[in-house]
Image (cartoon, rainbow, N blue to C red; front, side):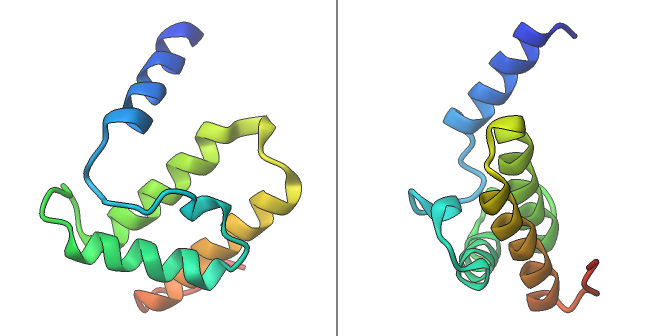
Length: 97
């Protein structure tokens, strides 16, 4: 797949995916625990997700990080990576770091 097709695909997913209802600005929060709690609640309450709540929440967070790519400031990436660990803990999974 060429880069233009990848960009269009991820842009469409970002714009049109309704698997989880997330509040605007969620990924801009400075509190990794708040991000994780919100993702967990959204994943558990969603009737449209296609996988288990943990995978849906983690996928959404990972997708956002990957979508931002190199433009994501180091501090923001650190907060979002910490949110992954918080999410793992909330779902009873082992932390990675």
